Structures are given as structure tokens and as C-alpha cells.
Length: 552
Image (tube, rainbow, N blue to C red):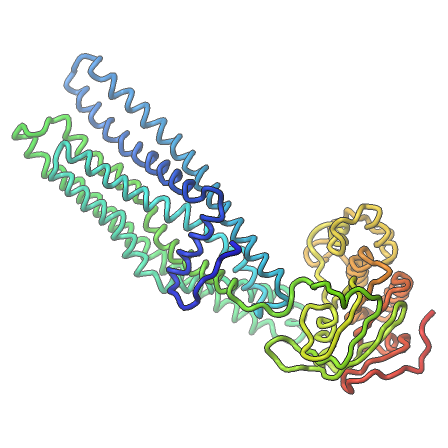
């Protein structure tokens, strides 16, 4: 997938086709696997048709009371097609899903690689989650529900028409025409009628996911500021629009299914009207009439899901195009910090740095500071002045717009809204060091003041079972588990949302745990500012020495 380059000016269908082609090439023998899946699907559907044909012939021939030996070959054929239908379908599902899952895994790896290579994509998180999960899953729909059934159905239609032509060419033409109508034209027509609804449904799911996330995450704030009514109204409106799109798709799918049933009936009646006179004239054996009339029933039965498959292709095309847009999104900053010669020292040095997000103006200018091992500096300023932006610049997530940044190779960051994952305490700590042993995890928890907490305890979604202080300490343990003597620790509002006593206890343990590491504290807390020997006020863009001595 490294060579994937999609032309944004190309049509959606061309971009998606090229993406699917690249994914097939990314899977070992991917195109051969697809051919095998189509062949197995053809064998399974052909077995269903063959079962009906041979069964019809067998019953008609048996009604003539021939010697039993005349029926043995047909009875073996019935067993073969009956067993083969299940075997071929199982193998087709096995091969087809294996290929689809391999392609899906390759695309998901590419998407994750894109996400890890950028600091921010400018996407709302709920919509981004849908793009990275449900939209990527559309690859499986393309392979399993679109390409394999449609291509195999075309071959089955041709093979069945050729077989019926042996008995009655005129009936074969009717069956061929009705099959093309039911298997290709009606699904295409249904997809065209519901195209706008199907295309709207995919982004609506992303919008609904975003709104659900916002309501769930911000429920206390919405209630506190009486904003829940507006949020729920917007949520219901999006849900109603999505339901309307789904209903339109279901309605047109019903119309297409009705058309398929009508084509099936016309096929059977037409074959009977054309083959009947041939039987009467002696041109066609009477027992062959059952083959000509019953075979279209089994053939048309295999078309039942093609209408939904056509609509699935419309949605899959839109979903994969959303993934393509995500892959084509220009990265903002760096996902991983690039270590170079400027990261070999133990001091943090900023020389006339201008900081700002890529594509935007500098939000802080001409910032210079020096922070050595064991020193503490408070970074202050009004909200929105650029404190977190400067921290991102120091961590190497975004490049400075001007000036020079020299920082230690190891940087620990305690985020203001550090996410707590719905897993064990130990696994949350290992986010800071994936190779940490159980003993190392316990030591980090002890340093963070959580020595009494069971490392195997499940903490719930976003740390629902933890108090505010415990969640902050658990996030601190992530930083401490990877601490090294050369480490710089950046604390982003470490006492935010904590009561005074809890904040004081957390900071007491924190100062004791960081040891000789350099500490940069982003804060509005006056008590934290007092214990830092030096202060950098971004409102003034210069370092302001503090008269307060350092904490012991």
C-alpha cells in the first residue's frame, strides 16, 4: 500500500476501483484468490440450478415408469448437486471472506499509519472513528456482497441459457432475457432510484456518531448550562434524516424485488408457452419440459440478494471514498517525534521561537528559555494564548515557525484531558512504556500514589470507576513508567478539575516522583506558579524570574 497514489480529480468510481485494485495487489495472490472465490460461487449457484433441473427431469422420467437403472445417473446427480451446493458455498465463503479480511486489514493498517503520522487531521472525532472503522469495513462489502455474487451470477446466467438451448432455444432466449432483467437491470434500477438516499446515509452515520459522542461526553456540561434540549433535538433530527434515507433505500429495494419476482414469473410462463407447443409437436420430449420450466425458478432464486448488493455497492463506494479523502488529507505536524542531533542533550533550550499550528499564523513569538535538569518552569498566560501550542512545538509534534528548539530525547507529557481506556490499570500505565514489566508498573503506581490499587482492576470507559484524583494519578503513572534521567516532563494543567485538597496531594506526590527531571508546568494555579523558580508569561512573551524559592 506504500505506492498508493489516488488522483483527487478522478471520479469516485475510478478512485474506489483503483483503491480496491491496490488492496488486491497488497494481498499475496489476491487476484487469484478473487478468481477462486468467484469460481466457487459459480459452482455453488450452478449446483442449485443443476439440482432443480436434474430433480425435475428425474421426477418426470420416473413418472414414465422406466427400468430403475435408467434413473440411477439422475439420482446420483441429485445427490452430487445437493451436497455440492453446500460444500461449494462454504468454500466460497471461506475463500471470499479470507480475501476480504486480508484486504480490510491492509487498508486498516494504511489508515492507522496515516493517523500515526499526523498530530491532527482536522476531523471531528466521532466522524473520524466511523471513517477508520465502519467505512474501512466497506471493503468486505465490495468483495463478498458485490463483486463475487454479481460476476458469478453473470456466468451462471450464460451457462444456464446455454444448457436450456440444448432443449429449447426459444425458451432459452426468454430465460436469458428475464435473467438479465432480474439479475442485472432491476438491481441497477433499484440502486439508481435510491442512490441519493444511499449516498447520504454514509456521512449521516458519521454525523450521528459525532453527535452521540458529544452528547455522551458533555452530558454534565449540557445539563448544567441547559443545553441538553438543543443537543438532543439536533441528535433526533440527524437520526430522523438517517432513518428517512434507510426507509427510502428499503422502499426501492422492495420495488426491485417485486420486479425480480415479476421477471421470474414471466420466465416460467414464457418457457412454458414456448416449450409446450414443442412437446405437442414432438420436437421436445415431455420429460424435458420440466427442465425448461423449473430451471428458471432456481436461477431466479439466486438473484434475491442482488438488489441489496447493488445498493450496498453505492454505500460502499461512498464509504471508501471517505477513507480515500482521509488518506489524502495533508498531515498536520508529526505523529512521531523525529530524534536528531538537537535531542541528545539534557537541557531544554528555546531561542527566539515562533510557534503556531501548520497552515496558520504564529500564536506566540520570540520565545526564549533554558531549562536544565532538575529545574522547574511555570508556563502561564490567558486561555488560548498558545501554551499547549508551544508545548506541542517543544515535543516535536509541530515544527517551530521560526527559531530553534533543543529538547531532551525523552519527554513525558501529562495531558490536561489524558484519556483513560476501558481496560486494566496496568494496561493504561503501559501506554507510557509498552515493554514495562509488572514490577515496573507497580513501581510507577507507587510513585504516583496508587500503590494500593490493584493493577488488574478494570477502570471502565474513560475511567468511569475512578475519582478525578485517581484518574490524574493514573495518567501520571504513564509518564513515570518511562522516566529516564534525561527526561523532560511537561505537565498540562495538572490540578485542573481537582478540589484543593486532592490537587495538593497529587502535586506533593508528583514533585517527589519526578526526581531530577526537568519540569515544565502549564497552569493557571497560583500555588503551582509559586513553587516554580521561573515563570514564562506568554502574554508578555518573555521569561519572568520568580521571587518564590523552589519547593524542596
